[in-house]
Image (cartoon, chains in turn red, yellow):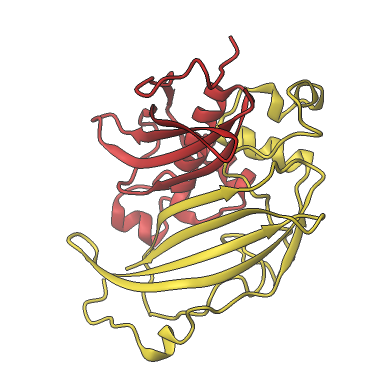
Length: 139
Length: 163
């Protein structure tokens, strides 16, 4: 079903996106993004040894928030702004859940806008990566 | 962990520093590789016909994707693929590195076939204390991306943490 600005209400929740990235997925992300920081694939890297594990790229989580919003939007609008903070580390083979709610709906300068308050949550329900997204709708 | 770290005047003087421009293409292959790396199943990011049906002129760059820098050995950063001279030269003697946060503001759609030119700017330096990591240096940068039509299509603001 096509999503439209008219049919969206503040407080609406977005369908969750769950993923459990393993090392292979992180290697694919490294290749796709160009970020070859060994902290994300090499258990012998000094920082990974100090932490006790490799960690998921913060930018993988950021990109996953983008995927989450893109899936919901279905190309019926334009992402004007997407931001997040990396508040906690996430580890491979753990489930990540992207969540979001419509926190504001308004019109400005002829644009039909929606603000989403989003997050990537870990298995304990902690928001390791909170963020905000502003979308302009076509209709 | 750096207990004694302080910002020097020499470091503060670099706020406002700008990189040389660096240009690269967004390609169909790079869009697909990024979409695959994230885990997208939406065909719009893989199949040009699907992208055109959705109203795009070519495969759109997925949200948060601003292209993969052209890699030139000895010039491009080998770890992060940053363009040569892209990062401000702040040597704080700290080796721990974490990402603090990212924001991208978009002004137009970016698709495969576009050429982007980036200029990176050091926007701020600050020191914060963390319970687990000790003193942290926060480097804030702002990168402007201009397309082949000379239009600014995106501004990315990031915070990098050294500890």
